[in-house]
Amino acid sequence: MHFHFQAVVQRLDFLLSGLAITFGVSVATLVASLVLGVGLALGRTARARGIRLLATAYIDLFRNTPFLVQLFFFYYGLAEIGLDIDPVVTGIIALSLSTATHNGEALRAGIEAVDGGVVEAARSMALSRWQTYRHVILPIAFRTALRPMGSVFINMVLTTSILSTITVNDLMGNAMTVAGETFRPFEVYVVLLLLYCVLTFTLSAGLNAIHTFVLTRGRRQVAVR
Amino acid sequence: MDLYQYTQFTSQDAWLLLRGIGWTVLVFAVSMATGIALGAACALARHARVPVLAQLVTGYVELFRNSPVLVQLFLVYYGLPMLAGVRLEPLTAALLTLSVNTGAFMTVIIHAALDAVPAGQWEAAMASGLRYRQVMRYVVLPQAVRTTIPPTISLAVGQLQVTSLVSLINVVDLAKVGTILNMRTLRPFAVWPVVGLGYFALSKPLSLLAQWAEDRLRPRNAWMRGDRN
Image (cartoon, helix red, strand yellow):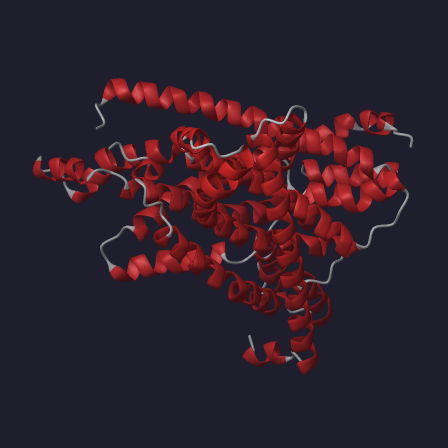
């Protein structure tokens, strides 16, 4: 058994250049999926039955089909009907639509966990329904949902690797290239596995710091429960 | 655009789709079963704090939970044969990877459930003269199993979607049949929704079961719900 990690080390700069795409896609998806997620959470808790059904159907559809199938539909399917979109953009769209369902459900759980008394107090202080959501319910719900949304985010970053199947040259895409060039798939994928682990450990350390910061700062600003 | 251009599927394609569903179900069922067994063994070792083994389990769990399944699949399918000098069949590589992957997630679920059984239960059982093995079998496990059911079914829903990745190492599952039909008919706009529908049909009942388990098996004991008296 001979390992040739030298081959990977020589191409490490190329491998790591894929990190930029992985990073960019992750940030874009984070923003888009948060916005969409808020929409879904509001839809799921809306008073109008039609809106609730629509949001539920959307979440059902995206949660019960594989991301790979969704991605191929957007990449190959949309091209067939004449919408030729860049693979990176397609990836961001597909990943956002899918990740939003997880963010939305985390936020919905946060909204449902808000104490009824707090909402009643806000309403009796003449806040409108929108103002109650904007200033009372959502800030509390976000704090509750922060931890689950953090793990949704990390999962999403790992899922960006699937975009390599539609020719996106992210970390995974570049690794496939290097594995093909060097004929050392074992070494390449071991290094890649560890790289992704380092990435997620760094991200969860960062998320923990944000979590602590938000919770302590929040407690000083408003007395929540 | 003419609607009838989408009707070029033959009965042969339906047969192909059904066979794809069969392989998807097989990969899912085998990897779930093996994963649960592996997870239970690892969780017990970790819970009992078996020296060395417990640390190894922690390393394994963190490694597999924090890297993409796609990388794991490629490492096993393309990498392992180079290392061991044997050629792995796609199906073998797929089952091996997904079992080990599911095992990592199951370890966390079962370990958390074991930890959730309060110390008082242990102390009471030990004080009654039961041995470790007996406490586990008659007192702790029956309570822990109940806690593991809802998260296990939720995991199963996720793992069912994950099986679609085995198509990328040439296992002819439902997603691979989709790729094949995509290539032949050049009608991806119709093919992928049909494939999605197949997955939906498999996944939706599981989701409903997960929802039911979540509602029905919510722990009755106050300490398990985390209620403060």
